[in-house]
Amino acid sequence: MLRLSQIRLKPGHSGRELEEKIRKLLNLKQTDPLEYRIFKQSIDARKKPEIYYTYTVDVTIHQESRVLSRLRKKKLKAGQVEALEEIVYQAPQAGTKRLGHRPVIVGAGPAGLFCAWILAREGYAPLLLERGAPVEERIRDVEQFWKTGVLKPESNVQFGEGGAGTFSDGKLNTLVKDPYGRNRLVLESFVRLGAPEQILYEQKPHVGTDILSRVIKNLREEICKLGGEIRFYSRLTGVDCEDTPAGKTLCKVTVNHREQIPAEALVLALGHSARDTFRMLYDAGLPMQAKAFAVGVRIEHPQQMIQEAQYGRTWAKKLPAASYKLSENLENHRGVYTFCMCPGGYVVNASSEEGRLAVNGMSYHGRAGTNANSAVIVTVSPKDFGKEHPLAGVEFQQKLEALAYREGQGQIPVQCFGDFCRNERTTALGAVVPQMKGGWQMANVRNIFPEELSESLQQGICAMNRKIPGFSREDALLSGVESRTSSPVRMLRGEAMESQIQGIYPCGEGAGYAGGIMSAAMDGLKVGEALIRRFAPKNQ
Image (cartoon, rainbow, N blue to C red):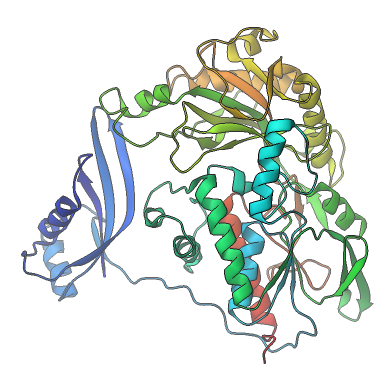
């Protein structure tokens, strides 16, 4: 197989034109056999109004080595063509230690689901416990919450099948290096379960909340067909350990304060918002520490403004919804950056606790909304939390969320950026109208944050205006608080993915080892592989 890169074609080109370009680069005749697949597709808008689609393709041809030698003599651009050996995911060889009981996985987000899936596929019959509802019920509960404001503590934007990413843009890109094929395996699984095929090659793939929910349901059914079991409304409320020659060792878990389940292997794929479970595990002696994360606001602009800034006016209405990613380093040594940008998306009330309010961004697959929104967040570290404690970051989040709830009187607090800069409550909106799921109210978002963080957000947004004109416009809408960017704790684990408590395996974003759907799913596979290497399948 050969990999060809830097293939450029104008927007609106046909598949035939792409094939002709490949044949020309390889000096192939029309009669020469050719098979190819798109490995990566992106839009190059660096020299507007000249815009191109740029492709990397993997090509299978006869006499590959002869063609490659001929191409090298032509002195193509460095790296434009190279021989490629495809990486195919392989599960590790199974271990020999006998499992007296099936592995227990806590949390049905991407980490827990893919950990359960690989274990079920390899014959380990895992039990997956999820505190919330199956995704079909969960969607109804969340939509009712957005309509009425009545929160279900165990079935909301944070808790339930699919995890917090279910109500998001459904981004499937990651910066995690992938020498073992886990990334490709996850993407191919998504396609098999109902996602569009283009996520396999788009530079910034996404599925949207509408498609993601269907994929999750199909993944659940596949896990069950492979021999796994999933229980909903089943919250982990206790872990029991015993002292052994090897040290403190897991022996059983408690569910919903009453049911006890024997277990030698427990995967903690809790997600970033299971604060009550964090506290229970801390009290049980699980080693953990506070970690840095980021907090801030959602900012809304007209999507058309973003289109013109990224593509220019000529192409603004002809190309897919544009995204952006911005960052600034301030003189106070804090970083301000955008996160989870949602083209044509909605700001959503993402609360999971009574009397506290958090926001997030969400898009449907079509990204057809009027506004673009993104988190603009500033880094915070344990020194900001006010005390040294593994759960101090959790308390810091809760304090900000309580202030956001009070500022919006239970609804999403909204403020124009100009008023934020003047520290004045917004009383009238400009041209940008909130595109939100859940009730909202004009307020003073600046009141939510310590002044240093507010000032950092203001400086960062103003600096970003140099990159996207209009980013700091007076009527850009801020809402808050964006507090669930990542886990505020890290559950310590060793090279074998195991905690100092034998048999407990921290996993995914809630354990502090992932950030986003793809990296969490890949971490779920890694932890599943650790169990496979150690234990024999249940059917042996």
